[in-house]
Length: 195
Image: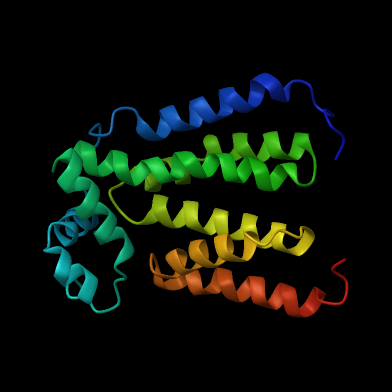
């Protein structure tokens, strides 16, 4: 990628990040609470030792999001607005990683991916809810970003970053195992072609 092959990105990237964050974080109580949000919030209200033991909700639920809700909720307060804001914040941060992945192809692709994600109705709807969606989205994008960097860069810290983020991803949502499986399949298929 050339140093500056898309000069408009100097203002399109910050604007896209601000707009995406605003759509995710402003007016957190504009919609009434959904049943699955109520369930998640109640899981986060359980004692920390039960969450860490996995005794907080349904047997197939993973502990990272309830733990996140419990820790941040105890710090910032227990209200729907707080729970929705702390659930949407990771998705807002994830917009930066989406841009970084696209930028690996070109600056234009990075800006396009950022804006597509920032204006995505599905992302805005689901990542604003007090559910695992925003946290899982951030961890999935970060895992893919570090995976791509691992394939092309020689940095001793990258395997550690990838490992921590991917382990957290696997603790956030059951079906995230398919993201890791896809990364593994990619690695197996393209092992000889990777420089």
